[in-house]
Length: 314
Image 1 (cartoon, rainbow, N blue to C red):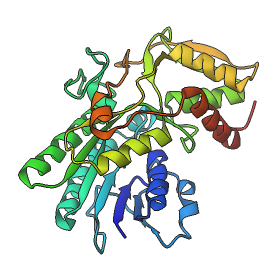
Image 2 (image 1 turned 90 degrees about the vertical axis):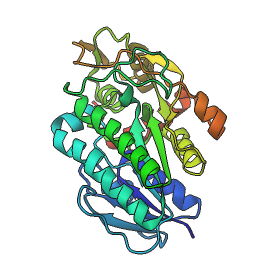
Image 3 (image 1 turned 90 degrees about the horizontal axis):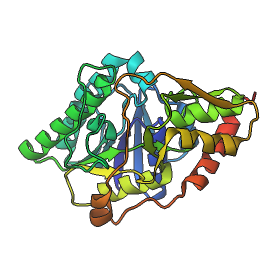
């Protein structure tokens, strides 16, 4: 039985990855310090003999006894509300945490996949964003702690790949959504759903003309799984190229939730907020045979079904 270590296992993506790898017949070692993760996301896995859990901060020395075939590094605060509140921890998990895991991969002779982000492109001057685009990032702006942590993560991963011949994979994740997102996450989808269910104003920054591309979590997990098992070591975008404006997205949520008290609440645009975000997934299509399958309407309905269970209506 293959054995995989998943960091950030109690988080939104980490918990879905843990489910997928157990379903595929792997032994899963979940690791999380619950800084932003929620143990309830993986409680259903605790009775399984195929799952074991380590409560650990990966910025400290990591020891996992026994063999490891794969490591998936998904530990990090990932929403603006988190990394603005925890800037040092965000930088440390991207730098020290990644360094520790690459060392562990080298020791165990394991293949490691690291989770980077579309935020490495910053407020892009190229649209859509291909993997060859180097980005437009403000390193000292409020978002710089997350953007630069992930850019460093990519740099040190490639250094271990070229200098130590560690078997590495890099995924650049675009906006993803689905069940188990935190209600107070601060990102647009959980904010919109919780605000609409409570009958509050949906916070739209600027005039809402900025665009995002939303990928349902099951599609993303499939892309991660295929990249891990591929032979490709350069970064790969995984996301949904179906682009929409934030205002259009807010209206879709309002229509779906159907709370007559909810409305669009316009606020000033935050500093360095990207105006456009759309992945060029040519590499994912050609190398992995991957593209998203779940239509936004279907994914939003599944996500709404989840948020109805965790948000009190107003």
